[in-house]
Length: 146
Picture (cartoon, rainbow, N blue to C red):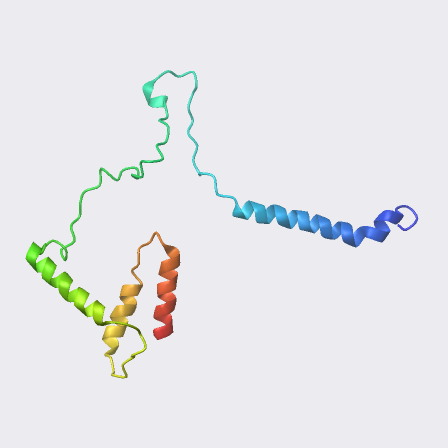
């Protein structure tokens, strides 16, 4: 091989590493590109019917398809609304409690029932589904204290 292709014999490790780099960059680039939708709309351009026209997307309309048709399911825990005076009283009490809290430096050494800790961990696990980072963050904190 040295007599027929001295360039390849001398520089084959560099050429191979460049080819491997190009192939790896191609796969990395494909993995970071957004996925195209898994469906296609088959529209005949010669068909002149109203149902064949696809309306343009409205970027200001965030309503999901079928969301307006869904029936309202009331939560039994939130059906009873408080009166305005009661809401003001409870919010003022909550503000007073939070206003006295200054830092986390004063950690109590009193025992807490394990059921309370388990309920707090369960509550941290039911974060909203649209924010996976916050859900992971809460789960990490819950695991640290478990």
